[in-house]
Image 1 (spheres, chains in turn brown, yellow):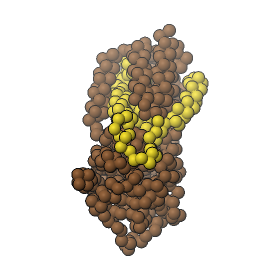
Image 2 (tube, rainbow over the protein chains, first blue to last red):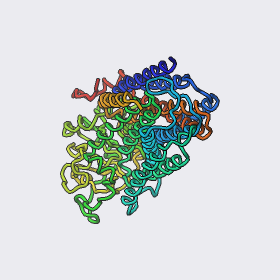
Image 3 (cartoon, chains in turn green, blue):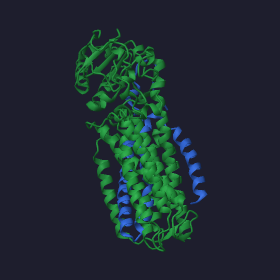
Image 4 (spheres, one colour):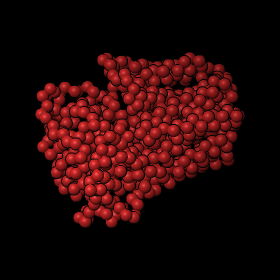
Length: 490
Length: 109
């Protein structure tokens, strides 16, 4: 009876997850949706705590307490610009947890028979040996969970900008070998675990050993899979790893016969996969291209403009830019990763306020993959109190670009590179971009003429209606603000 | 292992696809963070295993899983809330009146 109630509680929890995620589709209801999902999680946890057979309450409370303290600490203390790497790290923890739970389920087989909750909600005694199906799913769960763990931490490292995290020659070969190894060891594990051992043990030490090797190999595989992917593609990778952690949870759910895990894992798996697809479409590249390290590999097909002889660029000063914008009717700001690095979002907000007081209409053009994660720019600007209806998606703003007087590009490069539209030999050809070159005037805030993540030249900088404003974004924007204030006082 | 679980898995996947497809790009980062928190549902499995098992190995592996899953859950929901807290609609006061008279606003409902 208790078991039936527990399963119903899991259903309630999963329903709250679904409803919560649905409310995430509008900024007005998003926060409530998140809370709803959190309540669902609480219900699931309480139900699990109340399900029969809890022998170790002290360890449970201890584990929950330690985890909560660490979770609160990390969530509160991490600056908003480091959110992507934090999400990657959490994701890794979740994947690891799924793998460990599945492994523990195998290890518990070395104990006298325990009570168990079957999928149908009835209490049954552990069968003398785990079936082939269960064991295979354990292998899958450990595999996916481990890959998620190590892959997420490589992604974390790349997002943090740690050096040395790149592919090496022969990486593909090593990856294939490790992949084959994983398959081989997995098979060995399934075979070993299928052997009945004794009346009490359900899984022998051989099987446990193979499971350990499987986990280790999967960790290596996770590293190898993420290592060659370029830093600019980390958003896609994080979305994909998110999906993997969901699938790992679902697999563990199959092992335990737990509906909460199966439903929620499927939800998260689907969410991550859809997001991955959306982001690949935004870059106009296939997932295969991203995973095989598309950009890093082919820097050969350099788009227009030679390496050494660049045509001169028009460069401008803060006061010229200030005048240009003050007398504009419509200004659009295109933020990019450089804005996040310079932490200039508050200054930009101040600039926008000043311009609006002049009667200038200001909006932000947000490219789907600007920044480290989708919506990264949105979070950054929201932190600076920019109202979210001032943020316009690329597809909405592109048709109106011709009527924009001044575009201010702050730390964005590839997302405004017209080569994606015009140059068929360019590696980014076909990627949808924000057509800033169609505006009357473009001012590009940049530290130097160095290339962006795609490693290619940007013909935008050399166009006649473009001016470059060199310097650190924060300092430059502050200078422009200063000039604007002088103008307004005059 | 039950077929019912598999049926539920497939149906839940369809639900996931439908529910997630409607989220605007603006909210993709909180979405990733929020769904990441939900994937911490593993915490439930960790509780069942760590709590119901006497075998020392299995128990401590379960507890380790519990700690990690709890970090994922607690940290994940808090971080998502932090991000969502900042999504404020435009204040209804002054900014509207100082806009240029050409009327083409970018406001969205």
